[in-house]
Amino acid sequence: MYLSRAAQAAVARHGRKRTLKLSVVLLVIASLLAVVSGAFAAGATGGSVRVFGIPKGAGGPVMFTGAIGDYGTTQRETASGTPDANGSIIKFTLKHGTFLGDGTGLFNAINHAKFSFNSSTCSGFGGGSGPVTLSAGTGQYAGISGTVRVTVTFAEVGPRLKNGKCNMKQNAKPLAQTGAIAGSGHVSFG
Image 1 (tube, rainbow, N blue to C red):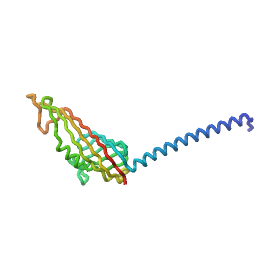
Image 2 (cartoon, rainbow, N blue to C red):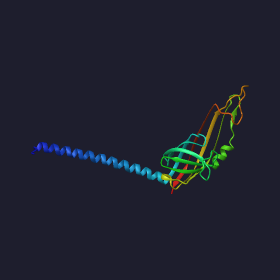
Image 3 (cartoon, rainbow, N blue to C red):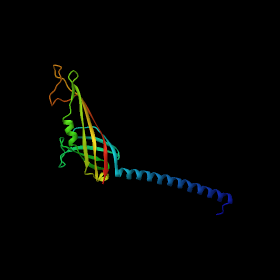
Image 4 (cartoon, helix red, strand yellow):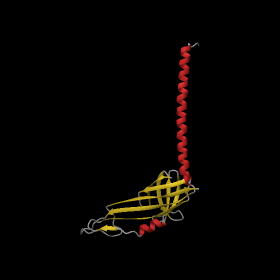
C-alpha cells in the first residue's frame, strides 16, 4: 500500500504525539510511585502519631494519623491475651497489622479521676490522661516501640427515681452517655 508524503508525515506526527503523551503519563506514574514509596519509607522509620477513638465497653473504633495512617478496633485484654474488660493491655487491630499497648498508667489515671456530678440535672463528666506504651507489632507495625499519651473523657446523663432524685445506684443505666479518646506521641519501627 502506498501513502503520499503528506499522509506519511501525518502518521509520523501522530506517532510522535502518542509517544510524547505516553512518555508524560509514564513520567507522572513514576513520580507518584516515588512519592508514595517515599511516604511509606518515611512512615516505616517512625515519627509523631495521633490517636483518636470512641470507647465502647472493652474496645471500640480507633484511628491513627501521622507516622501510622491506619484505622481499626481496640480490645482490652490480660497480659496473657485473654479478652477482659478490666485488662491493662490494649490490642490494636488495624488494617495493616496489629500491636499491643500497655495501658496500665492510663487506666490508673482514669480509675483515680474525679467525676464531676450535677445533682440537679443528674449529669456528670470525668476523664483522665496517662501513657500507653506500644510493642509487639505485626504486619506494617513489626518492631513498633514508643509511647502515646492518651486522654479519655466521658459524660453521662443519669436516670431519676420516682421521687425525682438521681438514681445513684451502680447498676443504674444512664439515659445517655458518650466518650472520646485522643492522644499523641512518638513511635519507631525496628
